Length: 138
Ligand code: TYD
Image (cartoon, helix red, strand yellow):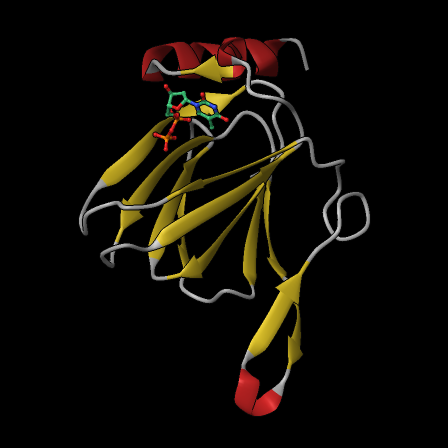
């Protein structure tokens, strides 16, 4: 599957907490064109329900617990974002669902492209067809 869990570099300032950071092209394998974040989400909510054709993203959760379920059309895997220093790199062609396991958890995303609705696949059957077509064309 085209995903990777990374450790986000973190400076420990002792009694005054920690600072985590990453740089586009250096720590993540793309230039960052867009940052967005999802907040104010009630516990138990499910978001996502789509895949992207070209977009690369790094997801991280600076506060709370959010489960990311990735699906490549054949198998599913689950990654729990429960540590501000944990990042999840996601390549294109993966269906994702996000489940909020803690009230007010914040999901942050840095993305390789500007927002483009045409890059989304929001229908699961269309996603399966897209994956199959990709397999046929190599
Ligand atoms: P969506 O990506 O579907 O959110 P989620 O995966 O959390 O369910 O986006 C929700 C809405 O926000 C949708 O109408 C598209 C819009 N949107 C933007 O306008 N700009 C953006 O950068 C993003 C990520 C979403």
